[in-house]
Every structure is written in C-alpha cells, then in structure tokens.
Image 1: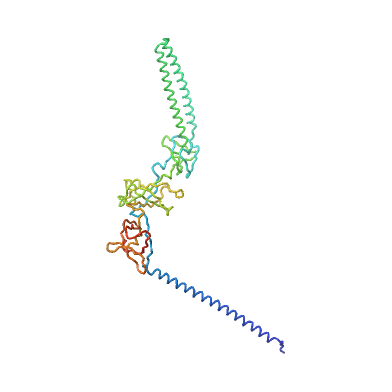
Image 2 (image 1 turned 45 degrees about the vertical axis):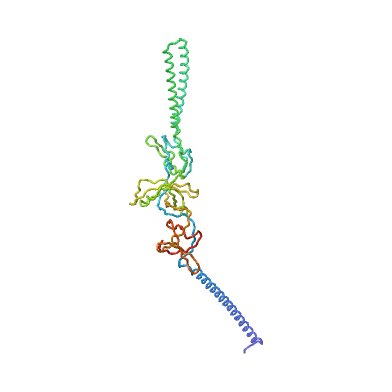
Length: 386
C-alpha cells in the first residue's frame, strides 16, 4: 500500500525551481567577472602598444646605443698612474728608549693610546739614583760652606796684609784656598746636575704627540742601558704621513716636483685625497724585475672620518700638463674623418654633423676648443676613432 500526502508534488516543484534560480545567479556572476577581466586585458594591451609607439618614435632619430650627453666644464689632461704605499715622514715614527738601567715599575700606556708631547710613558726604579742625587746635594752644601769660609778668610788676610801685620805668603795661601773652594763648589754643582739628569731618565717621556704603535717592554722587566738603549714604546704621528708612489721607469721622466696628484685607498674607495709631488728619490726600487722610482706625494691632514695609516696601498694619479675648468666631452662622443673631428648633434629626424677642434685629453675626456658651447647636447655612441 502506497501512502502519499496531498502537497508532495507541489513541494517538489518548488524546490526544483529554487535550484534553477540559484544556478542561474551563479552563471550570471561568472559572466560578469569574465567580462571585467577581458576589459582589463584590453586596456592594458592598449596602453602597452601606445607606450611602445611613443618610445619608438622618441628613439627613431638616435643611432643604436647612442645617448645624449652635455658639454660640461672639468679639469682634463694627461696623467701618470702608479701604485704606492703610505709611509711616515721623517720624525713621525719615534722609538722611545731609556738611558737609565733598572726595573720598570710602571707602564702607563697601551697600544693604540693617544699621547701628547711631554706625557710620562713609563717609570724605571729610581731609588739608587735618588740616593746619588741626595749625596750630590750634600756635596754642594759642603762645598758652599768651604767657599764661604775661604772667601771670608781671604778677606781678613787681605786686611791684615794691608796693615802690615802678616806676610805676603800668608795672603797668597788664603787666596789659593779661596780659589780651590770656588772650583770645588762648581764641581759639586755639576755633579748634582748630572745626578738630577740621570734621575730624570727614570721617567720615560713622550718626545712627540702621537699614537702608541707598539709596546716592547713590560712592567717588571729589567732594562740595561749600558749596552744599548732599550725601546719601551714606538710612537707614530698619524698627522705626518706621505705617499711613496712607485712610478715606472718609462714614466718617471715626466714627473716633476710640484705637480698635483690625487690618490685613493681601498678602505675609502669613493674618496680622492689631494696631494703634491715633493721629492723624487734617485735610487731605483727593483721589484719582480720591474724598475720603479719613488715619487713622494705630500698631502694635508685628511678629514677625521678618513684616517690613513702606514702601509696602506694607494692608487696614485699624477697630473701632467693639465687644463682646469675647460669644456669637455667623453672621448666616445668625438669622431674622426679625414683628419678632422666631429660630433653628432640631435636635430629633428636627422642628426647634424658638427666639426670641432679638441685639445688635451685623458683616459676619459677630451678638451673642446671650438665648435660647441657649454650645455650643448651631443650623441655618444661607439666611436671608430678616439
């Protein structure tokens, strides 16, 4: 027996109709998303095509690989390049020793410390020299007393001799005793000065201002100055450095005292230190069968944030016959034809060939003597003749 309810068929149609509406709404949403995606793609493609056309039109007048550059002013001229090292000047590196013998009782500095001229670096045991000084002071006091007595006795004897009371021989003896006492006093003073000097040697004093480069004697060590003056510390004045540029023998003939130079070091690769050639050493330096000569480049004290140190490797550029603040162009912008030089100047659909004359040049730039003005634009590309 099959049971049924009065509204079962109607309910089934209702639910079937609701499912169809839901599917239709989903399809309509997907179609809208697809339409939007297609529209975005079309817009992007249109913009891309327009941008390509603009760029193509802009570069159609320039030869391949060419850029527009401007005529600017700069220093230009031939240079000599060399490698070198930073060295202390004469007197900038001092090995501080001791003239006194004894045990090092105090050492006041360490490597890297900054000291000023006259500062105490170390102390040597001074008890023996203190005793010598005290003995010398006592000898001076004794000699002074003898001198005072001899002076007074000579004065009395002189008065008695004038009065005819004593003989001439007694006056001569008094005069001699006074002269001997005077010389003994001077000798005692000299001995005292020597004792004070020797005592001063027990304090190791900085002869220059600088940085402690090394310490070779420690507290508790015994030093003996009778054989060789022992070195306590080595001081270096970092403000008194110079560059030794090793110039090849083929270039040394072009180097002159007074020429301007610049150099760089690896630790400050983006900074150029200015300097000047102050000396050329006559003795050759032979390294790896290559003959070099040392050109000394002096420079002013660098900025505080760029500290230079001895033995830093440098790249030195020494200027030759250099022209300052002249019109220049990169060498790849200058072309040659038939013994004449020209540049390409942008001018509408075709480029204008403009003839120029040039002067000095270096590795990167040429001096422009005529044919162009400051700020003119030219095309720089591959040049078949520099």
